Amino acid sequence: MAEASLYRIRRLVHAYEGGTALRIDELAVRRASIVGLVGPNGSGKSTLLHLLGFIHAPTDGTILFKGQPAGPFSESVRFTVTLLPQESYLLKRTVWQNVRYGLQLRGHEGGQQDRVREALQWVGLEPDRFLHRKWYALSGGEAQRVALAARLVLRPEVLLLDEPTASVDALSAQRIKEAAMRARKEWGTTLVVASHDRQWLYEVCDNVLHLYRGRIFSNGEENMLFGPWRQRGDGRFETHDSDGASFVVDPPPSPDAVAIFGTDAISVSCERPSREQPCVEATISRLLWDRSTGQVIVSFLAGSRPLSARFSAEDIAEKQLYPGRTVWIGYDPGAFRWVE
Image 1 (spheres, rainbow, N blue to C red):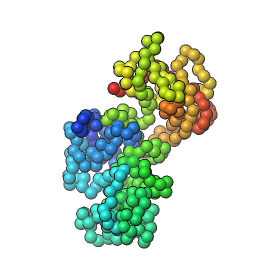
Image 2: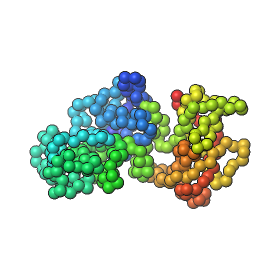
Image 3: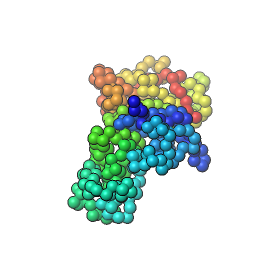
Image 4: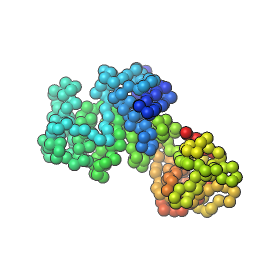
């Protein structure tokens, strides 16, 4: 029976000068799945993609690919796993030469013209217009699409995308998304995507991993509250932002610890709860449908702090939750876990 997990990570640690960038005890990625990576800048998303792309070997731990250990330049991963970085590099050549380059390295001599034209069409670039265009005559969005075509032409088993739509125009972003999804549909390509476009991720991903300070601390969406925490007269601690939103918690392990709590740990009311329950006023900013669970993720802004909670479609209708509505978010001050 074939290995169900394409990747399996065990006790992985990766460090750079200055500290540990990534620490994952265990992680499995299923074949033909779509995995999203979310988290603030510096959380380890790009590092994880580079390790999954076998561009670097981890400082410690094991990455199994198809049940076997693999590393940089392994025959089992060469040309089957490809990474599209946020800042893609094009050779100082024509679009044709850039896209066919991987086929040349593979030794594919026959059918190059058809494969290159197909890849360009997938990313929405008309081959007759773009094949002989020089690299310097491309817009930023066009260059990113050419870079993606250069990966798609290989028909990879794994496509790793690092903020693929972060710095491109709306049309290019849509074409990049469509091409990646088509690869999964037609070839069974496994996609791992780091992106700040959470709406897209929750619409298409089978699983979304939340990274912070090099660790995966949830499968899905969780809330984070940042300090500094200041002690109050009643023994509890609080933090507040410039917009006046204040959160009260039981004593944290340190003044700068990060409080983490799940989307199911808060209650939402259209009227202010009793004075005994800590709460904060918030405005609904958007609704996202999570394809993997069928639930709706409601995003809030409490002052300048983003929060989220999950609801069924029936709850959304019953509570009449919609963007722009002001609500009250109640929470348990002792329901947080901490990351230092």
